[in-house]
Length: 143
Image 1 (tube, rainbow, N blue to C red):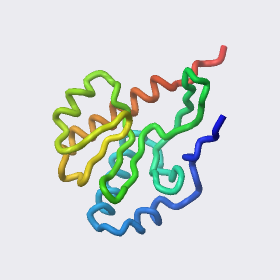
Image 2: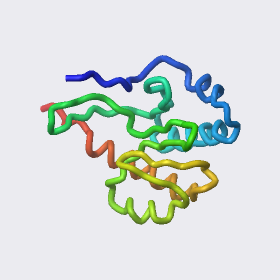
Image 3: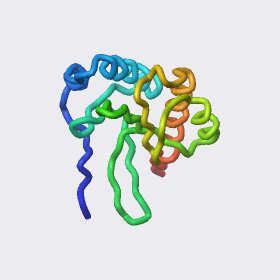
Image 4: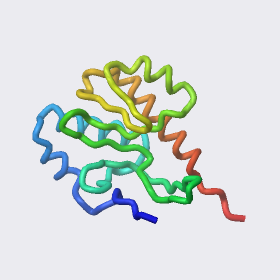
């Protein structure tokens, strides 16, 4: 089975954000670090060369493929900032409807600028996404 390419690294989150060429994207990235750190209680960490993730969980698909991923994260890409959030929590559709200008696909939420979305709604989405991920991927207690 193929190994996951996206793994936690020792790369500097601050250096990665500092190298973002677009000043507004860089400011958005700093704001997202604060929002996601507050929502998770976790420090930011680079996952692969371009994803800033918070916390981690281990998943196993029905196919048998398994791996680790951040509870929540984002990547400031050229076309849009990609936020990796769960979309399946109760009330998610209502929050997406109130979020503002965005597109989505699976666990990916695409936002051109943070000013395009309602910050309070985004914060609720991240908090609820993290709670759903922790619940879904919680390890059962050992007996």
